[in-house]
Length: 404
Image (spheres, one colour):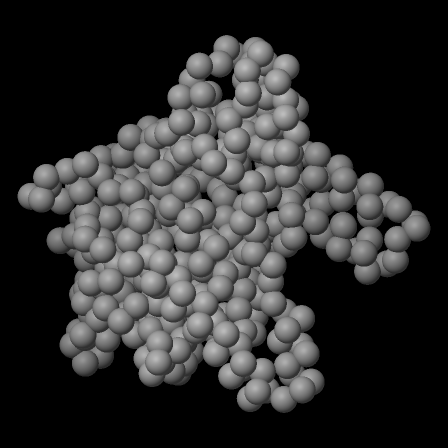
């Protein structure tokens, strides 16, 4: 089934890209093509040297092929001195290795971030570079410096391209409930945490969710992960209209969740909260995300998947997402995404509207939320509901009024 869906999306991408370019005209087409992003599907930088390193007396597991379960076993077999050496010599590999101990990844990513900051500062000071390049280097150095603050927990960092960042709020290793936020377009290192309009950023949304969870259940140990572990669309070009980037992102999300299964012990599978284009990624990944080993009567075996501001999930109904997934959906009336056609003819676009009555989702209220990025605003039904679902307090969820 997965292969059929992938081929379908390849065709959708080709047709959608042609449609966008044909409709936009020559000048706009050139701009749209320039905004197309190069997806990152390869292991982190340093992986080639890692697999060729035999100085430990044995081969190091290939990040491209090793499962998170096998990775967990490998890291557990090493002595503290060996672990220290690995994070010093290969911080980007260890810091991005799903299945590696969480504290080890945090330490490795601090080393990788410091190295990236120093590289950016050196470029900013290089008078041989043009002013625009140096200005971008200053911005990169500042973005990275903020992530080096003592209270930041960076679970993954990849400096390639626009930069990928995964951050954690709370004690992930000890959490009873875990939420994973999957953002949409324009999420990257430079937009990870914004002070001017924080709720537009993955960090701002995750921080708001973590605060609301603690407000609703102060005695429950929770953790929230903001996962920009894939290259997102830039703006509203062809990438946003096709599933090309989501096709590459889905296995990376599946791998993150498989890694969490090895390194955390929540009382239920992590909840996925998928915003905008992130819901396309979640829809693509849903059939293959890890399920808990639970009996049919045990609700802890269900994965909660919340989609909001969604252009579609790449499917026509929840039945295509596989058993064990409970989809919750919302869109506030002022969200512009509601004006985007939910194309179904010939499979074009991202499929059916997840908030439609026939889709199979449970519709929840987002009262008092405004616009495409207002779902995490304090006092909104959407933020309340996101926290209640993440906590498993389903009786507290405010459902949408029919016809609203």
